Length: 254
Length: 345
Image 1: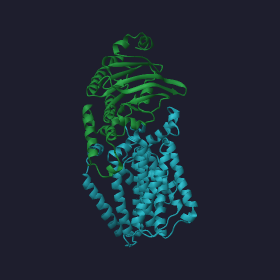
Image 2: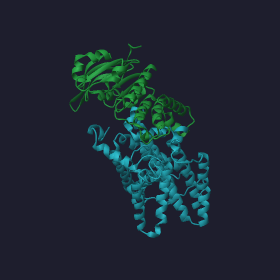
Image 3: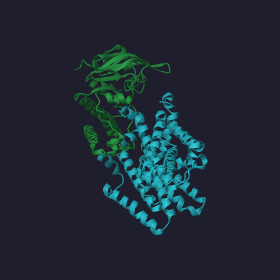
Image 4: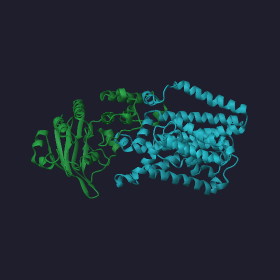
């Protein structure tokens, strides 16, 4: 299982107005792997995420998911192929309830047309969306707040709301952009357990994170970016001893 | 669906069961209002009631695209005009009856709406609003200057009143009842669209279209569909207007009318169907009621709109604040990465 590649990034380069944000990065994520992506600010981590989810297109190179090239695909098509994501700055839908926020992911998974809406709410599609939404809300322990406006949720709960919405798209690969940012130690430990739980359910996770402790404790493998280039790609123990990584990243900030 | 709707309902205290509410609304619309108006006596009052209903359709259809899907449209009156002219020309030139002109007017406006939406939906926020403003004025100019087809500024006279399979009483009561039936059907359809998972998808587009995209929603398609449906109902309203008024001219479908409809949606509350209905009723009936104050009534109405934005930013019943929507429309042009925020996406 571990040897088959779910996501392949081959020589991907991205230029922002001549500035190289991501420089010829080649790596992969295997099925059911939990991979951490770390690097100093401006290393190109979020840019790489946006490249994977289709918000920006690579200047060079190719990204393949489950054997298919993602070249030229719009974000919504990539999402439907099975890549769910969260955002670095939380992007919940504030004027909608928690339930409705999560249903967005679920309704993309099952499809939706105006005709189904006109036919009323009794159809199988609507029922499936409701079921999936409820299941995911249970999973993140938000069921009791299903009717609350997302804007009124606490910061920590919003994090789970975002993850729940991405989970409702039934992703094969979940990419989390700094999920632990702004959480305290207890909350971070909870989140780590939750992410490990997702992986044990068969979901593959790619994680951008600043918190070393989180990445080093749960990730199977760690990819290190610096100034847009990959400088290390190994298991956490090896990365922590890597002199190049220590010099460019661990030695300075932490 | 049930939970999606109930989740939203629990905001406003005790709720009446939907079936009872629908029955009460039907009794009010089809029995109480006509009986009361007949008793007070007056074709004029029926005209006001009919106009109110037509604007209720217009406001709720604009609410679908602006309130629910968050696309600021400034050209709604143009599509209302397309519906009115389509119905008027089909009945005066081809002799089609009301039951044919009504759906065809909707289809004509909806089709033009989709054609307009195809290239403009990729425009970002405020640029889309400006594009719809231009399209509304284009429709007006075409209606005004294509004299061979539309009679230009002279308008179209002698449009036959509403008939049902050849039965054409032409009384204000009959017109009112038919318009009320069409309004009820339109509201039912729009309510189904809004209070469903499909409506949730449109709301997600309003709240954060990039995020909706990342969740797997085809945002461009959703926007085009919402705009098309909205224009369809504007066309239906146009057909009702031309058959009840008997005369139409281009200046009835100008920019000011688009703003009037937008004001109804904003006062009622963005994204709320009951809000749009109340907003339309308020802004049609109030000017009529204040007619004796002459020009002062416009000051009164302007003050009401100003105060409602200031004190009640979400309108009477809205789910999103109009100021927020506008701020976001403008804000996007000035913040963030220019290359992705400005012009075409």
